[in-house]
Image 1 (cartoon, helix red, strand yellow):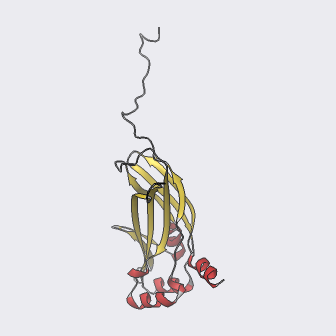
Image 2 (tube, helix red, strand yellow):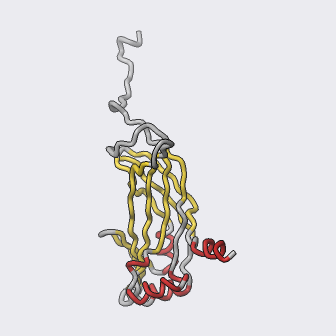
Image 3 (tube, helix red, strand yellow):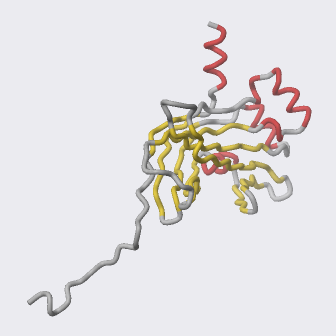
Length: 189
C-alpha cells in the first residue's frame, strides 16, 4: 500500500489534453497540463528561486520483432521566476520571455503549451502507426544546491506527470503542391 501511495503522490501534474496538428513545417503539439504549486514551491519562487519546468515529447515506432524505435524526441524548458524590483513573475523559454502581474497568471500560461514544433517536416517518418508521448516535470537538477538536497528527502519539491501516450500517424508527404484548377473557357463548352 505504501508503494501505491507514493506513486500517486509523484503524479502531481496531470496531462489533461495533448494533440498533434500537421503543418507545412512538420507537426506541432498542443498540450494542457493541470497542476498547482504547493505552498513551499510558491514561496520559493516568490522569494527569488527560479523554477525550471521541462516538457518532454517523443515519438516511438512500435516493432514486434525488435526493440521499439525512437523516431523523434524534443525537450522544451520553461523558466518561472519572480523579480522583486519590478514585482512581476516572468515566464521564459530560450530568449523569449513574458511578464505577469500574479503567479496565477504565469501558471495559467505555463500550463498550456501551444504550437510547439515537435517533428520537422523532413524527419523521415514513414507512413506507419507511431506512439507519441508527452510529460511535464519540475527539473530539480536546476534548483539551487540546498533545494536539490532537500528534493532527495522531501516530496514537496518533486512535481511531475506520468507519460501520456497516444496513437499518431504522420501525414502523408505530398509529392507536388496541390493547385486549384479552374476550367478554361474552351473546356466548359
